[in-house]
Length: 407
Image 1 (spheres, rainbow, N blue to C red):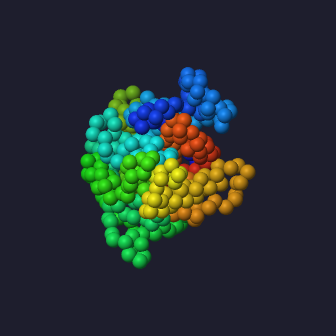
Image 2 (cartoon, helix red, strand yellow):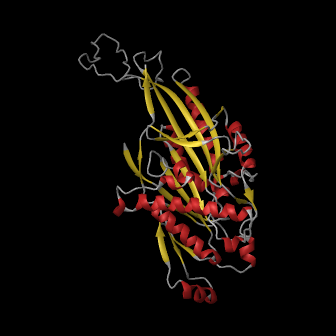
Image 3 (tube, rainbow, N blue to C red):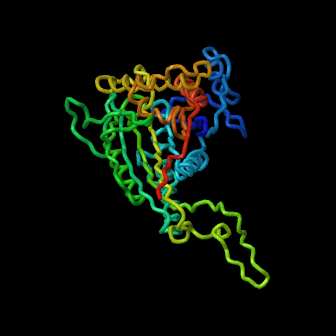
């Protein structure tokens, strides 16, 4: 069992047209060649902005993360630097999680690609890119070794709406027991989502069709901060089952394969590294069964009710969203504080933290993608997001390959 830290990437979106029209200024600057950024008055902003911001925030504050992407970053750059290595680990049998966090309207859904409102290939988000990469590798491996490698891919799509779990790929009408009796349980130290439908898929197109279907069922609404605000937390999960034939190690060294002067050397199993390992070529081997999960988590944006001007259902949703994010923040603080080692981690305070228990402090390679606005009008929300992300860097996960052996 290896220990690995939660990786944190920060992505700064460009100023929105609304912010440009209101003469908003950027309050984030970058340090070239390093994964660092600064928030506060910076050289290049006008005197009025600098003097106004300095009254409330007298100095810049700098942060260092694993990755920092400025307003000019592309979807491809974010994927290749942060997420593709996670997909490689996923193929090796490790669990993985990408967790998108930030205030409402900061670009989380766009970055993840779960909204499917981007027609141009260069705008495709992290999820579609990861799915095409995954199937390309699986197909290549299956073609090169059809007898010794088999795989199955399953998907599920959940949303957490007002602390109720909803299966977006198997929607059921709400009754007195909730949305279809879905629940979260713990089995042998692993978190299990009971009642969730896992759908088998055989191509990236089929998988992305299900993503689109689920996204259309996801709860959204309009607020003063975001015309298409996500009103729920969403978790799109890909389960990969692999079966690989692995040759038994060659331990017999008492009879080296050394030919006589007139004898043609016969290659041994150990010498022939180019042959695929199959039951035919290596009959003394066994099957390695790998079962790994990749969670793509698009959290609803944190929001201040006085800025969203939400009323009625929108207000109730906002309160529920903030309560879940507060519980998540408490879990991150408990896991990331070295002085609290061994202390109670409040996973059970919210269904959100319970669902993410394996991703934070458990068996998963995890990336937090913190999305922020550069506008000085969002200074408080951006500072909160950066502090949140900074604490997450201290979390240690205990990762293992999820494998079993069968003869």
